[in-house]
Length: 234
Ligand SMILES: Nc1ncnc2c1ncn2[C@@H]1O[C@H](COP(=O)(O)OP(=O)(O)OP(=O)(O)O)[C@@H](O)[C@H]1O
Ligand SMILES: [Mg+2]
Image (cartoon, rainbow, N blue to C red):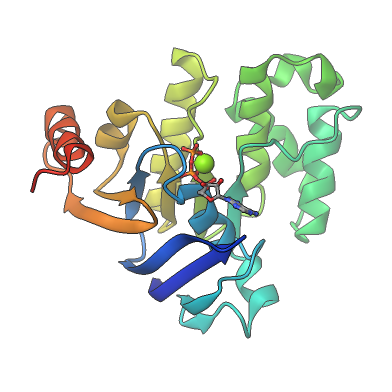
């Protein structure tokens, strides 16, 4: 589904990504862990088609992202750090806007359904500017999946969410997985990564330093592997 080879990104004479090779299968849920500044968000932005790589190849659904950017982007749901929502609009208006942008059939119906799924129906018509951080994050999640993307790119999706909202998000990811969606999730929350991901990669200084399958949702295993990489012991 995703095939990245020899990907590099340079900015201001600094190598942010230093040769990323990564294959992700359809339906797989992958967590990307790593310290601040490792290049995680940069990798997602390149995959979302927001910034261009310096060199290397990114293929999604068998298509070269450089040559088929528009086609590939239709299949991607991207949740960045910033919510991308319009402050003065309500959840319904925001979601209908994005739904129409992605040519979703029955955008309004779908928007109402999603707001219900993230349990904010009571606030359907209130301007987003009055929302708390967690509420905005819930609507941002709904926005990222309004077009039923085949590939979901989530940058720290659990940030700002309370326990209830975390469960909602995890259920969204798992139900999309059942439909065959491939998810890449950047996170600092090892517990969530262990619980919902099949596989984890650790990014450090722009390189993948570990890549392993999660067994029995073991948080201990994830913490241990991460510690080994950060201490530089191998
Ligand atoms: N446009 C840019 N120009 C110059 N440097 C950049 C640019 N974008 C990112 N960087 C640098 O690239 C490095 C990686 O940034 P990135 O945002 O990908 O890290 P990250 O792994 O997502 O970190 P965090 O966990 O803090 O979110 C950082 O050192 C950052 O300063
Ligand atoms: Mg980041």
